[in-house]
Image 1 (cartoon, rainbow, N blue to C red):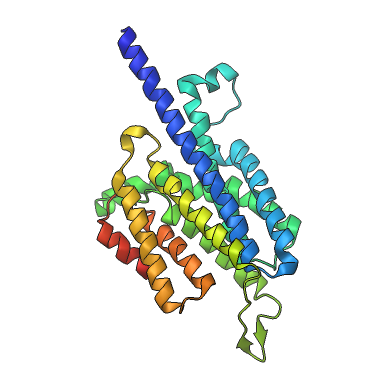
Image 2: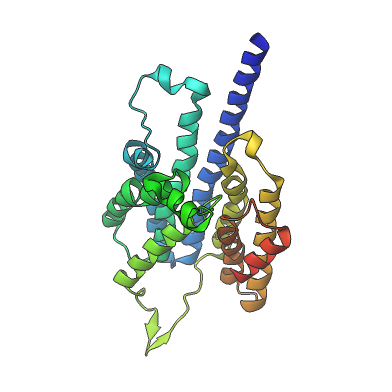
Length: 292
């Protein structure tokens, strides 16, 4: 009995540490969002972009802690400390991990409407999105809420598979960003005499740094979406790598070595491979990344 108990405790501790490392890696990705946006916007808007990403994260954390996580998973943390430390506090660390996913939504939106959004309206929108909109989709797919997954399985023989959030995180963020872009329109100076004018990146090293931080953190985003050690898969890691490489090479060819295009290439590949990274063949992941 003592040996069994010790093994169980060790397993819980290992799973808690595993998902905590993942949470920290995805947390670091938010620095990537910040530098990517700072390097892309014009110099006069750099400070605003940095402050916006940081404060968006703080608002998102509170919104998800008090409202969003409960909507998605039906769990809350308004209990005693003794209950919260059960299983080495795994549920708390799981919240931390998933909160970093949720906070990516405002970061995606922020990049989409760079140089066009007022500071406080953006913060309010971030809080509402992370508290209500994103958790609805998250719970629908990852927790089987409202019977949607069961309905799909009964109707079509399979549920909707999204291992690490190609749709749940990135597409939802992109859809919201698209709506915001359509509402706010183009940046000032984007069109001259009816023709599109490309803005040169204000800081290519910052842009590159942001892309690299996001790329490295993505392996925590994808691989550690398993959430427990026994679910970890080397296939997810290699598929993520190959999709990233596909994105890099195709963006180099099509973008004619444009630094802004090339540094978004690996991110496009990594976004696309999240959903099926636990099922695809590495060659399929390479093609997926290139297409993305």
